[in-house]
Length: 320
Image (cartoon, rainbow, N blue to C red; front, side):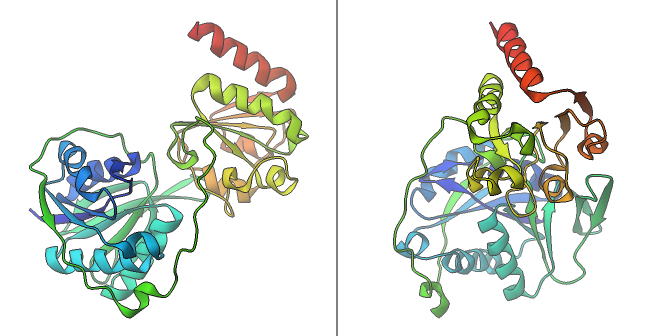
């Protein structure tokens, strides 16, 4: 059976959920071979094997931490040359897309970004993508080389499928470009205790209708009652009401949760581009003509200052 390379996103050995989703999708088209790089790479093997990795290629070197993405591209290229896979899967994060694009250029292959599903066809891989505010689903395959595909988080349910998970050391020769851009410092992100925005199963976002930074506690309270991440529209971020790291949209982050609640967000195409693949969308807006309602599965026409607290109270009551 053909092998599929899966790039492992982890933090010091703790495997992030999007990687486990990639392993689920990889099993549909071949045998997953995981590539784990950097500090703690070897510690990922048990979890990866539990979720279907037949082999885990690991490499650790100071370059992976001290420099930007090129050392990781060098390593993924070495894995590609060692395995000759039918496809290379990478999480669809900002870093993941850069790694995938650089790899595709190096190996002379096509690239597909933001896939939401995969299937095997005629010895290759066909990727599904959502387009035009999820009004259409397109199916694509690369016409040249081995498919390099980035997959959006929450595109597949994580499924355990124990496999051998044999650990092998990956020999990597770093290119001259690998040390071109050095990381000079890191500032740990302040923890909110909430899920990572791009990985969360539920996202609650606020927009211009929140009418000020002081009112975002309403959005946060609803999110906390649901165990959700907090997002914001570009209008809210540009107004300084919420950090840019929480912006959902074309110039922010793309999310694809099971449930997306948009409060006081009109639904401009810039925002829709970042959340249109959400499985269920609930819109709360006092303007019945707001474009967000065209996309929503459920719509509430009302003042968010009345609806959101009532919804939060109801959630907490049912939990209690």
